[in-house]
Amino acid sequence: MNTPLAERLRPKKLEDYLSQLHLVGEQGSLRQALNVGVIPSLILWGPPGIGKTTLATIISNESKRPFYTLSAINSGVKDVREVIDKAKQSGGLFTQKNPILFIDEIHRFSKSQQDSLLGAVEKGWVTLIGATTENPSFEVIPALLSRCQVYILKPFGKEDLEALLKRAIEEDSIIQKKKISLKETEALLRLSGGDARKLLNIFELVVTTETADQVIVTNDLVMSKIQKNTVLYDKTGEQHYDIISAFIKSIRGSDPNAAVYWLARMIEGGEDVKFIARRLIIAASEDIGNANPTALVVATNCFQAVNTIGYPEARIILSQCVTYLASSPKSNASYMAIKKAQQLVRETGDLSIPLHLRNAPTKLMQDLGYGDNYKYAHDYPGNFVNQEFLPEEITNTKLYDPGTSSREKALRDFLKVRWNDKYEY
Image (cartoon, rainbow, N blue to C red; front, top):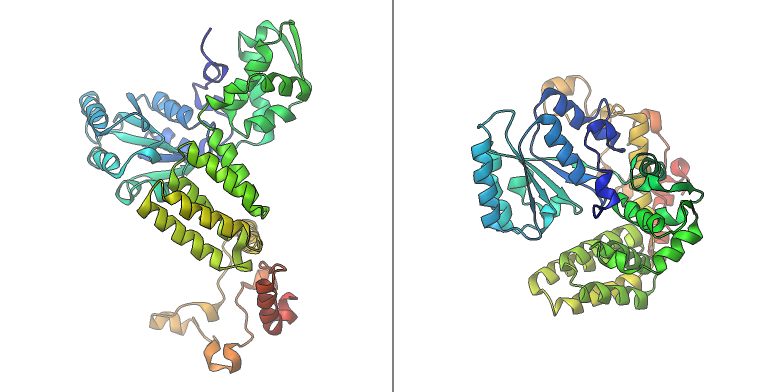
């Protein structure tokens, strides 16, 4: 049997689809769309091995629509037009049974290739489902993105991945030929990096290369098998996710030597220059932030420059940016602030906006007291006046806590003079 375990276990029905309850649960937005039979063109955005292709196939099966698929890696405009012509012949215009065109790794499509999809999507010849590991705001042209719903697939948790392993043991006829006991799963989960496909490939390798009929899966067994079969990972095409992780962690850890080494690994491996540069922008804000605000400026200019220059000279610009970021003071205070703020919003909901902060463009709003008692900061000494800006229910909640770098100490001192009685800076 040459079919990999991950393919043999691929769910056929929505009920068997693992996780993503916000999409496919009873109240999930995608399930509700399926229930009424109106499927919009959509983009599935999530990490590798999370089930984007599987979900697209299930949508086609459950909606009973013709299903066409293209890979952005080896398809051109001609291939797109040929599939669209076939789709037009197999479905009616503006019906609920329009064929589904699934494009894997749609972020790899050029602008002209994406442009070739616009007419078919707009006229209802196909329902487009694109899968991407990259932020569609950057990689999908605005005209196409505006015609699609974006669904975000969340990474698998430990419980999800362990449930997948148990499903393999209980349901796969080939795996069942041996008596398998999952004593330890840490090594399997760590090596897979949350990628379900990689997890099952590793698990199958470990189990099938054991000669005994009874296999007790331990961390030591997994590591011994994988060390002898490292070529497995080179063939997956996803090693760059491990390297980008090492790259970002080296920058975060202020090691320019390691950071530029991993940069070289990506360049030599043919990694997309935009893929690298975008992550430098994220690192500049997430890991450096206000400890050195210039880092974001450097990273943003790096992104613009490498897109203008291209390889091979872009490597020099990338190296300059990488070594600068790695050598900068670090702070995740801004990242933690928005993380706390979002959690607070989820917990408290849409709290009422204080009346004095509301806009009052109409007489009715003015009569209702919108904007009353608002104090215009520039009318006061030092351009500051103590007033309330948070909803009453969460007043005195401190979300931003500056770090210990010299720049952030200056910010803390500034805030302390103004807000220490309220937020204790």
